[in-house]
Amino acid sequence: MNLLPAVRPSRAHGPGLVAQGAGVVIQLASIQRQWLLPDATTAYVTAKAALSVDSKSLSQEVSPKGLRVVRVAPGWIETKAKVGLAERLAQESGTDLEGGKRMMIEALGGIPIGPLEAVRSCHPDRPPCARPSGNHHWG
Image (cartoon, rainbow, N blue to C red; front, side):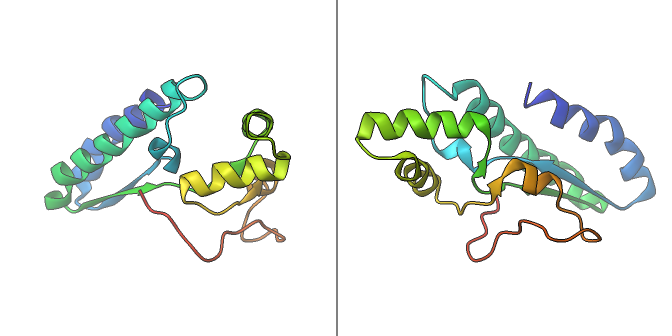
């Protein structure tokens, strides 16, 4: 679910971009590929790791033809699923929810972006917007 929807458009539109001699392919990866939780995120992490390999391979293939491939790996974004995981980690570690969130963020080496709703509303013409500052992690 997380791999093929990202790879298929790149492969479908790649020949047209190559024909025009310029273009940029942007793929959304995840820093979570670094933190495997077998009982929670194996399929997601596997797909994002595979996407990272695909991005590198695609870049080597099309860079000589004038295309760029950019892989963006955002930091920790608060979602309902991640809050649930943070609650479980907190309970297992004897800490509170914020402590569980900090454990996840530190394990990923990322910075919190905030609730997903804030990120979805992020648009240059419509501030306010949740924007990361400080450490940026590029996959």
